[in-house]
Image (tube, rainbow, N blue to C red; front, top):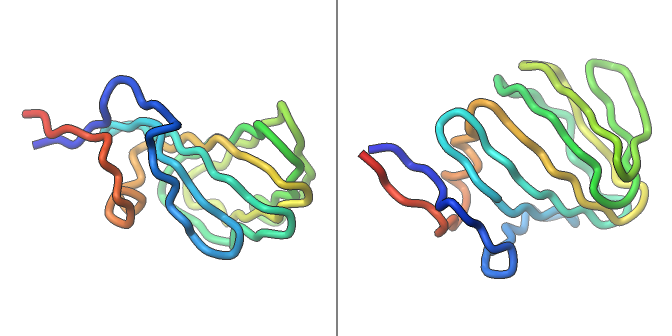
Length: 124
């Protein structure tokens, strides 16, 4: 059986997962190939340096962030995007309270395993 999200995700009724340190996330849709996630940061919160096998694009919907991707540091703000290729070392620091929209391919199974995501259905 495959896990996929429901077709329409109402953010008001979708739980935020508290990741600690002023960071929380809300899963907004996924299947095996793609996943979209909203990530909320308070000023000063850190998205620690890490890497993963997924391709990632990030859109800054609110605030200002200092991103480091493979040793290159840039500040992004509302309307800006970041592309992170698979296995790149990356992280961020929130300069102003902010909101990022992350899209991953393939799905981040680790996010589903660690969440109480209830907007999913099993399909054969």
